[in-house]
Length: 604
Image (cartoon, rainbow, N blue to C red; front, top):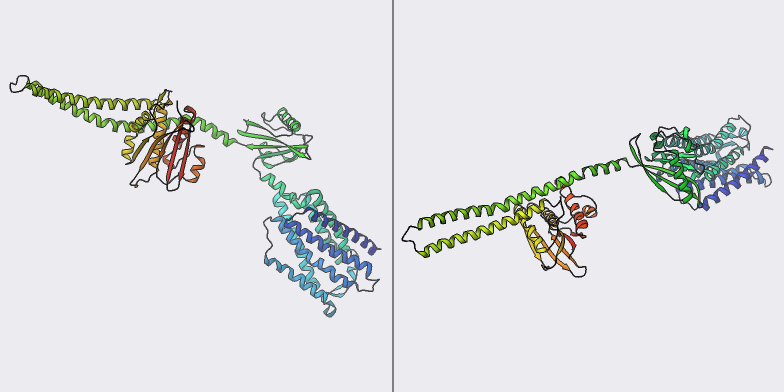
């Protein structure tokens, strides 16, 4: 009777194995763990099928039952190896099957050889029987058994350790897997020790149960996607807060970050309605949550709410996203992204913006003061010399009034010399006036708007005055080319545009190494008839801009000067041209060939 029941269960096991193999093949997955399971089911199918055939035909065809076991043991002996490889692949996603793993097959191959030649030496079976207790085993049988059970136990330990490490608990999927392997092991131990009188068919019967458990783990819980352990581990590894509510607003998933942030315990919120949970913060009110979830349900689209949680001093961007199945709403993913640092940085940047602008303005003023000192020093010395010359001529004129030897012609010569000195002084004073006017306008450019019409010639004159000192100091040569007509006028604040051009020229000078002999900077202007714009270009012949600078230029404050620069000057220049001249700044840069900045401005 026991043999008949065993045959029935073997038939059921074979059907389930074939179904499982079909299921795996239909999935068309190329994952290594899928292939390993396919191998496991194939070995189990060999095992069960041969025993089933043994039951049906051994007596009828008068064939010794042990000869069926010769084939059965192919599945029995190699199955533990594939279980071990499966456990390793499950626990270590990067696990690779190496050449040395082939050594695992040495003992099973020897075992099969010993079994198939058993009639000559009886090292495997001394007496073979369909009932375990009636069988007498040879010495090699115990070597084979020790190796087989060692691999199975090691596989169980690997899975158990990985499960506890990743999720701090044994999940349903892992429990089913462990149970599926443990049952046949326990059955074999019970039968071998004769705790219960079992036939050799007891082991495949136990594997019938195992197949059912594995099927449930795979089909019901998506075991081959490794969701059983990995999903919870991934969720807990996410630093942002994360919960999922179902169609009835019950919380079905959460992660540790969410629980820790709102001082909650998993048992207090899982499978409970989110609207009944006390989050201890007035910013996450039940009304707000209910409204957001309702909007997601109705529109089937994500909505985002930015909140500041005063109680914990954190800023969160909360995403409410619909979870859809076959285009039908089944739940909501609530994702709280911590944007505290980002928001605080925004506040800090806004707070420091005025200070940065003021620092840049003062730096520009410092540069201009140096230029003033240099530009005014020469004419002041010249004026001083001229005044000395006039003093000498006045003294000479005064002494000649009563001198009878002085002729009228001499008096005219003295007057002529005086007039020459006065003309020289007028030129110096006019130059000083231009410098003072230019510097005065430049100094107030950030505090007020002085829109006017001006030509490129006037613009370049202001630039020459202000940059003269820096060019001489850095031993640089400014080569100016103006291909525009004077009647072409630019509308705007000339002092603001001067500051932009000066900044570009300063950057061009800084592009050269200190030891460079030729520091040429080209300043040019031309009219583009196609667009109706004037293009003012500043070109250097330095090493060019690094790739990382090119990618960020005009998008943020970036500098190639290291700690000596802020990147604010160029960023403000770009903003100035965009906002006040309705223009643009572009650039072209090649490695070791230099960089050209083009200021593009519409003309009136």
